[in-house]
Length: 386
Image (spheres, rainbow, N blue to C red):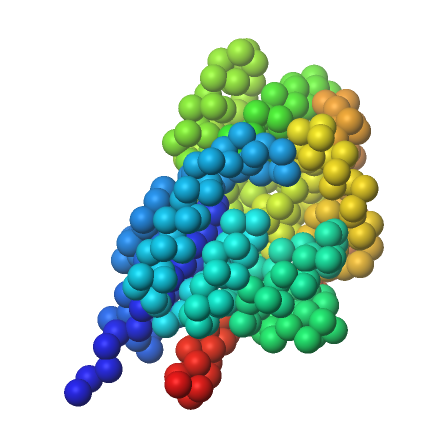
């Protein structure tokens, strides 16, 4: 009798997780084309056949305090997922990022014998290091995107595989700026700055106007400038359009998605800290990283931080390659000065290209396939013990 198809539970919380989840699903489907995927997925995962029991957007809240406002809804959703997976146990449950949400699910499911994998390490090496105890209880296997993360788990005896970052596989070593500009119908006449204020409602609310103010100041200094601003989804597009309506006349091309092309077309990128900084690094772009969060979240996080940097290029390099302008330091004036300094500095751009190429090679490991192989070995191990 043929084996039943693999059943795989997946929960992602935002666009970058949806991208990782889709890559992992595609790699698993190569060896298990009839595998069944369900849980919470975005549009990319759903396009590959993931049955999403709840909308992913519900999980896309950031900070420590901000999710508290949505707590009853989030707890109901988590309870519903746990009940669903206990009633219909998958061969493995994979929580992709969203650690505050997913680790709670993993803990409950592991207790009833369902194997659990967590994909994308929480920044436990950076702050709240005590969480490693909960992670060890909740997770059968951790998949990390970055090499220094795997070393941390090995030290704490948590089974781990460094899979590299799938984006490093997807993005070319040599970006094609002119090709990207042609695809986006942008002129080659003057310099272009890409503005990426984040994919979450709260990020765009805190950074959107600030980035537009910086764009205006840059334009006063250099009238040949133009800007490109990718909106992560239709809700962000609406949010950005209403900010632009108040901002007056700025030469900004707003895109639906296409953040990679936007960055590839740009001379310099101004972005919200997060996966985008890694993408800009892989595209070998000079960048300025900025971030703001609610004052209370910031007060709590900054006291617990155990690392000197927040952006992935700096964490990977172990030194400051890109400026980080956070919280109260993030003013239109400070961002403008840093952006303009990077626009005119070809020596810096050449040095960054060399540094970023080395980092790109370090995390280019055929990530989707490596992650899929690790997931299948967790399932096989479980089968052996039964």
